Image (cartoon, rainbow, N blue to C red; front, side):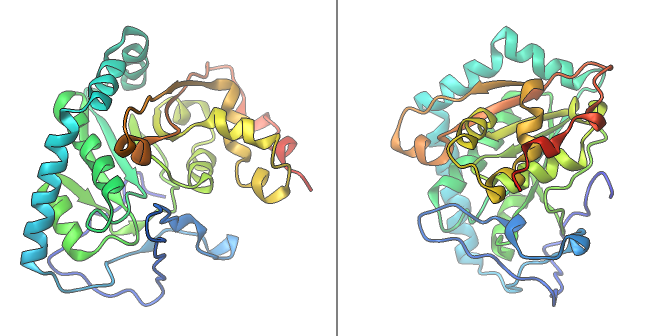
Length: 286
């Protein structure tokens, strides 16, 4: 697998015959592209282009205006002030700098952003990612993927300084340099895919992950002891003891819908940790 997928050319998209779009339920942000039922041996990266090949300049202009308003609105909220302050605290900033090492920039990869035209939570999430890049000079390029992104949304994302991937990585991005994965409210299987493909000390130590609380997954395991629940989270559960987690606080209905249950995750493994001998099967219930 390549370290970085090709970037989508939104000007000349070409149709893909074997793609199935997962449409979210209205009001619920669940575009889980990792839930497509594909046999295990066929789950490789898939070329992707938006299903709609036409764009509407008027809709594009309205969405850009919506995003600009959303960014400005979010920047002035108590949630963002708290979020920004948390990232600057010495203990957390030290974690970011440790992941950066000798690098000056940290790539940001956004999975599962959803439809920024149709729903407010995805717009808030994207706004937060853009504000982070503006506030911190060590955050580099932003790459985005979700299979329901339209051609028009792709153009808006590009105008906002993001690159839309042309490959569905299924979350299996092998990390070769410091990378911030921005994945609020993605499904557990996607986090597990990411951990599985980077199941080694060097790779995990290059990752910062913003998404659903791993501590909460561990807590819920005791409530839902079934094979489907546990098997889809086995790497999450196995890596928990090596994870430093910082929970994010929400202050309003808007921030709650977009970020409730979200945490920062850092994987502080020492060089002698042998993850290959860690028995992830211990978490599997037959």
